[in-house]
Length: 405
Ligand code: RFL
Ligand code: PHB
Image (cartoon, rainbow, N blue to C red; front, side, top):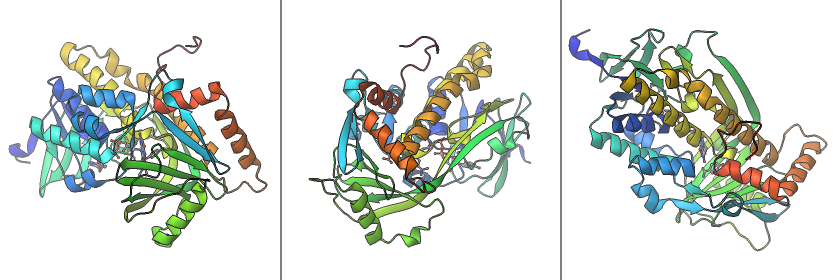
């Protein structure tokens, strides 16, 4: 390989999703070099419709990092959410229950656009459309990322590799067999999601439990509505023409005095529902973050927030190590993240279990339990607070388990 094709950096970051881009920017702000490698095109990454709910902690971090200008202008701040079941809506007031906290609706692809713009503006390297990324020597002091770009074979020598390449990435599989343990759970359903060009039919999100299955009303802007329907896990999108989607949405959301506005569908897709955690979140000089190391079902709206929280911890640990040589935080990365990851896993599993029709629930036992749980959440302050504080993002993460705050 010619010398021109061999480069060096402090942190090699695989993946330009929220985890990789936030990490790269946090490091840049602290004067630490990184190179971000992304296998898709910029257009593709900026157009990928996914998450919409940002916790306060995520919003605060993006603003602190200097990438929150548009988010502050265009983000929709919500102080509550509606749970709908038995044809009636019930509001959970986040602000009253959590000391004034709430969430912000701002599309993941908008976060990604803002972060890419900041990265390019900073001049720090971000390569799109790289192929065949191979993390090597990750258990040595000088890990290497080999890849090809523009038809040329390249070698990036690093001090550390950050695997931010999502669930289907190459970093987690680069860890030798047996070094990580995996825990997972697949749910017997998926989500069909659409984006429609129409004003939202409600100011707040609606999580709806119905005999025919779960439905969710969300939004992206005053002109764009995001809607989801529980469907079969291996459903083909071809079986869902527009009329069927709207009919099913009207049936599930039916509620006296409320109607769902229709509009042209501009995006559609099917997502499986899965819980997955790999532990520990590090091996040698490879550190995994975000969907590369844990997946939550989307019902709790936690995936993007978890990814951002991981890299915040990782960035602090790397800054300490590069500036002082002290590796205590870096060695403790996984241990620092996993309690939060598992609490979010639990919340996402709990929300998923409470709202979805269970296909093997032959005599309706599960449906009765779900209804009892929903009624409890909407009538007990303690139960409603539990949902609210998890949804807006737990503030009590570092409290010892025997100290109730
Ligand atoms: P990403 O976003 O998957 O980014 C990984 C990046 O790595 C690239 N990549 C590679 N690059 C180089 N070489 C390779 N070999 C590579 N393999 C992959 C990919 O192209 C990609 O650009 O992971 P990251 O950064 O960890 O971020 C995680 C979030 O994307 C994810 O957790 C959320 O979208 C989950 N999620 C939600 N999270 C929330 O916090 N709130 C929500 O409201 C919410 N709603 C959702 C969601 C996810 C959904 N889907 C489609 C899975 C709603 C849906 C429908
Ligand atoms: C979304 O707006 O895409 C969204 C909102 C809440 C969720 C999942 C997705 O739980």
